[in-house]
Image (cartoon, rainbow, N blue to C red; front, side, top):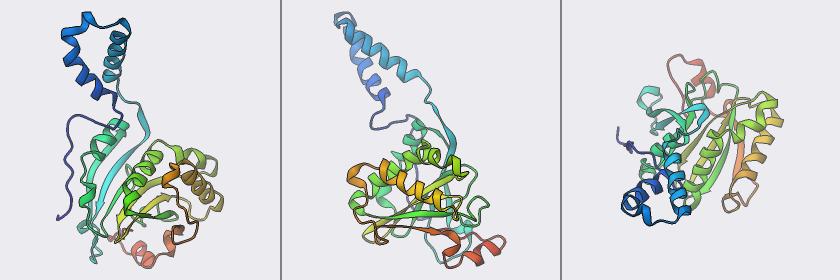
Length: 244
């Protein structure tokens, strides 16, 4: 496959990963521990404990997928598994920080979906659903997708949809010429209250600098999967899978 490859290191790292500080401090502190103030030694001990704690698991496990744009309707030729089981924030950053996001070709897509759900219209979980789609300028696109992914996996979106019996199933980022098309997929495309709650939560929880400034369809919009051209053919054809 002529597409960016994922190489995952053994050590998880995130921008704020406390274990990074632990590793750096331990080498310096071993020889000078007796000369440290008590407060500094306590901080070092705290960091050591944090570094050994297992990260809290997500409520759901997640899978990274790569969709290579092609006119070929054969699912197996277009969709590739990048990483199958993301169960906690440390694993997420181990994958996210090692993926060459800047090398994704135009019209190719990366999906992060609940484990067991494929990022295709005809998956049983997706058939009656839809997604919010955001056209994000390239300069903001990676930060936007990073926040959307974290909010999704941390159940910030799911929490507001529980009473509607709806589910947020995944997020996607697709490279376009001047923008990225970033999507948040939900299960119930006919539940107007759920759709509105999801929109409001996305906008409210994004950093102010990343929020859309134009509320019109040129900035973001909702679309049910069955409103897409080719949906009926994809759903009705056994063995082929149409990817957004």
